[in-house]
Image (cartoon, rainbow, N blue to C red; front, side, top):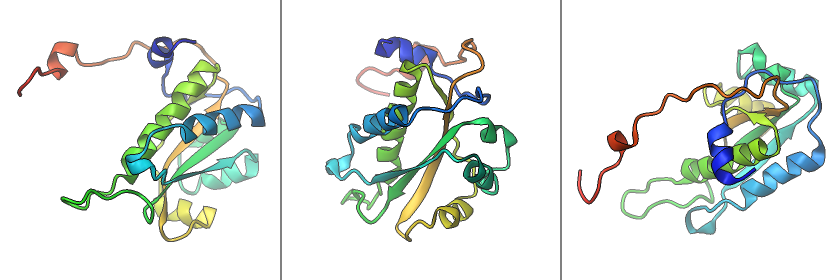
Length: 171
């Protein structure tokens, strides 16, 4: 699938077929994330892949919505704040920005491979960190359930018109 089609067809999937995602396919998704740009090329990320249904069910303690347990795989995108770039002028940590780029690489690649994903950011970070035994400097940034969709129907996307979001040369 060409990139424009992937962008247009990607949506937040919350219902998955009970079909495993092949290990090689998950590796393709992580490889896409690995190729993402990051501030000063520091690549402050790691990805914990859960495919065991019991582990995914246990993840439910961090995210109370049951639909996530229908996903045959969940990628936990983690950022390492000890290696992420901090802007000198104001110390802004770019870890979340770097991870956002990598996560979208995963989501678009998944769409191109016929898979569905969903960004989940509203979860208990402390519980997730403890569940995964993450070191102090590593933060779980997003949960990304991955699987084969039960539908290929893409809902109409409600987006602001282009003229409302673009400014030329000044505000």
